[in-house]
Amino acid sequence: MNNVNGILLLIGSMAAFALEDMFIKVLSVSVPTGQIMVFLGVVCTLVFAALSVASRKRVFDPMAWKLLPLARAATEGIGAVTFVTALSLIDLSTVAAVFQVLPLAVTMGAAMFLGEHVGWRRWSAIGVGFIGVLMIIRPGFQGFQPESLFVILSFLAIAARDLITRKLDARVASTVVAMQAFIAVALAGGLLMAISGASFVPLEDGQSLTYLGAVGSGVIGYYGIVTAMRVGEASALMPFRYTRLVFSIVAGMLVFGERPDALTLAGATLIIGSGLYTFVRERRLANELVPV
Image (cartoon, rainbow, N blue to C red; front, side, top):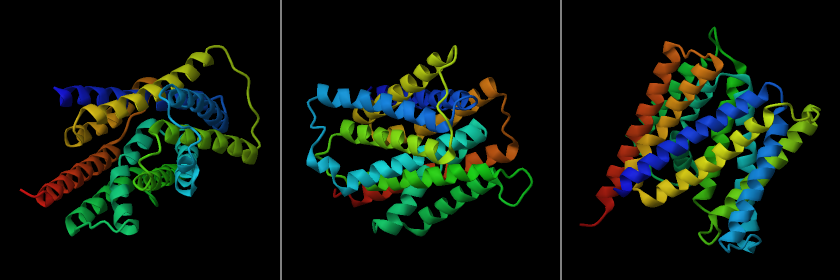
């Protein structure tokens, strides 16, 4: 029963994240990307600061403000800038499809930088997954959008974030780590505004609900995924992370009139299939190492 509850929570959180992406894309039509990031960063920083205080976590614990946690926050800021920029420039379904390669990028990074052993089967799966990415963005072919490279930069930054997270001191509270991440998002948004020369635009009629939708769905998504991982087993939950792509495709079609072509869907299928294979392979290897 715990796994069922965990799966339902995870699916709900993936739907919330897809809604957050949708709200951000809607806002990006009339609001500078940097302004969206500043707003989300400031509000979510206050939310997680309040959660840290309410749960009696040490917000200014010296362990939380060393180089490694700050480096993690920096990668979060870079990932947010590139991800939100991609959302503002290309189809929501394309962003979501390419971003599904993140688990493969983390596996590759763990092998290259953390010394984790990855056999030829998983390396092959990683290669297949990146072929799926190439099928979606199609560099050098008709239909290639240079803006899609922002998605590549984004998942590389987020993969770096996840690799750094593995090395964080366990005594640093998750709410404090999340708070630092959103501080970085706000700062990155402000820097983007300064570099681009964009000006903050006033709130228009109806935008307040869109802003609240983006913040609310983001917080719900984060809370849901954390809770799901605590009540269910990772092996049961992981395949359902890919439901985010389904929700994103549906949102793109209903709200923005997007129609993913056959090559995009085929590429997404390769990415998801290779990701699931890599996960199953990792679980099998882990079970073989458990003493009987």
